[in-house]
Image 1 (spheres, rainbow, N blue to C red):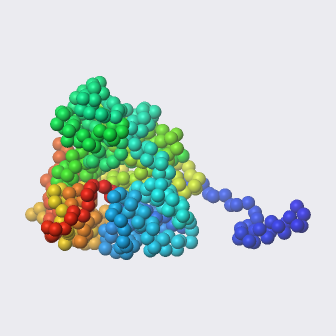
Image 2: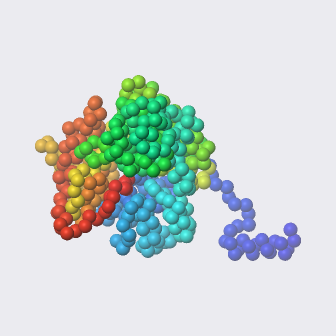
Length: 506
């Protein structure tokens, strides 16, 4: 190289602030200890933007510089890593995506993000093309697959196809548009007359319809006819279950199979609507657990072939008549069950499942024996007893809250009532089954309407009995927490605040 060329290289290095020597190689993370240390020292600002921090509660304690940007102030300003901007005027929210758009366009949030010395990264519960565009304009990287791909996988009909490709069976079904009751009878002949219908998108409480007669069909006709292709399933006697996993370049890391609380009238007004989870050893037979893990790993590996990587959740339907395991649906994201997965005993022994999602998107090379990890996480010694109940307002009325219970640790008294004990934002602060962590969602001044999320209650032990009905202790907790909400009726002349207040914020 001549002198002129050398000066040119040196000048370029000085201007760029970089050495002219080769870029130093990034060290490969070789084991769990190194992976944990990597996140303990993390300097990359990462934000979880959502209505609340519930879904990824506690991840900030595993990953340095992980912060929450929330719309709802569940902790009254007392959580050190939750930022809630001051209320600004906004259109009525119709989805979580609307809330996230509001947050990302809020000046206080923009100032917080731009104060980062390094290029920020964000993760979401829900996002769409609008949010991707805003993030690009703000210079933020979204650490999830593209919204278009997530939407495609979230399509319940597509889930069946991916499952078929992965060798994961669905409940006997027919995929078809539905034109009328007569047409439904014709297309469903191969699977019988006792049916469960699901439209392509949405929360199970709003898009799952149980149909056995023309009267049932007429009740839901507007939500079925003209809604495109419908998943028409044979109705089976089943137990709902959920399992979360993370598809990585090293393989699919699989969490525990959890039981689901579904449709309990004390918790939700929606028949078939999810309202909580349990995790405990012996929840299912070993053959069912093994099959669910194997199906999840196969599904995750197929997702990688589809271009998806990172966190996802599968619902499985366990046929109580023959023990068969069927794929229900796929949620390509974190979910309401994520706080259960990420706080289980195995997570404290190794790392929360979501840390592997962050690892996958960090572009840091790593080695991971996924088979060994999955075997260890499947060990019943690494499963402890916990449950969570999502408490909704179940009465058919609208009023305005004047009082709401604080987030923190609550105590169940011998007479079945509950009382506030102390503030905390850790679920691990719950010492026994007579204590629970409550995360408040609705606040004084908010409208309380049928289906509104009041809060989430997390406690040790089970929520259900052996017959998979709510046990007496759970009912005491639910009644006790609900009794702490006080409201005043709406003035008779006041219009209802929302036309369809049913979108789920968790």
